[in-house]
Image (cartoon, rainbow, N blue to C red; front, top):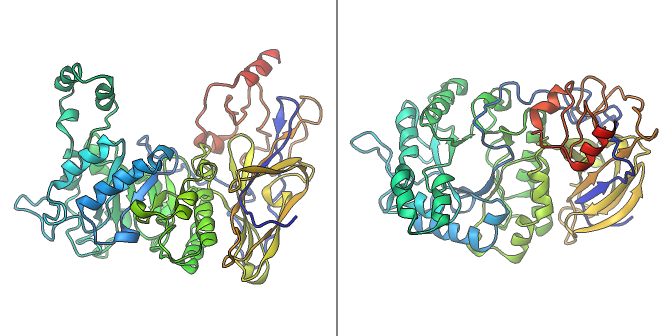
Length: 521
């Protein structure tokens, strides 16, 4: 099959409510590719060991950040206009709700009370007024500081000021939020929407803190980052804590108890070389991410002009598969139609926001310098997201063999293209292949293949043979079956033996089909 697509969905037909998926051992990879840390293809055994639990980031955050496009050329006007654009373009409705101000918002010195203050020239109305404006549009406001003496742009940092600065961030709260009884009386004359704003805390202070790593005085990050976590928690407000340590001291190993995300790499720049390198670096830590705490390979560059349309689609697709924060980094006030098409693809966004929360990773490589790649990750609903990624200089055919995805070759699968939004093929077994253009070509290449797989029981409902290498479970138990002691990923009880899956799957009420099957058995 020739194709320029790379994002697809593979779905398997099932005629009974008892469905199970089995996997095979990790396939042999090429010599230069480091295998996952265990024999589980989608190993998540390190996730949740030290997980911060502040109730936030059950899925990766989505929004916008000022740095990639504006750097220090920011102002309250830019932020307000960006808030307007997020709403007007429909981005906010798709989940892009965090509006994050990066470096350069503050004055060059603290005030006489030793407090951070906004730059009076660029933010004359102050951050509180800006927070009110952002929240009134149903968005969330993010702010920036640094776990060092200065920020990266040599403005005041927060080290040794953590408690005061956290209190300041939390203090930028509208009077509507601070005095709810008074506001309820006022809202009697305004209407129910006003009540909703109060009770849901929409009108409030800062919601997100990006905490950088410059001018860090040579202090170990494991000592510098916990004080701000404690200070944020002490405010009584839940603030997303984004640790921007650049991956220097492998934060995936320790930041899970501190923050909701942690940078695994140095800063991205708007180039194919930077984007692909960062994807590879972030891939190493896939087993450590999950709901509540995510690996962060830095913001999106989509729309900033340094890559082609096809490369930007690959960039967005891979970030979605890796469960990376989707923080747009271009000027959303003047996006091209192509940029808007990429960042508003609902089906690709759904891969990123899937509640199972398992980071996709590289599972097979071939070609010169390993430039033909298959990336994959499991989703709820018995699906697997797969990326066929051509990083070569010429078009090539890439094959995703079921064995590389942890499936038996007899598994029957249907394929859906998430960029064309159409089904491609049904009842495919053993593998799927597509002709994928080089990243530099004009046609749509280098996008992910998204697959859903459901293998029906061969005995009409009785337990089949167990595979010694299941995707998640280390006990050897099949976990797709629906019944009294098991779970289906559409929403039934969780199998007790699956400790690793239990940490990442929010248990929802059983589906009606599963209830019927359970009661009948």
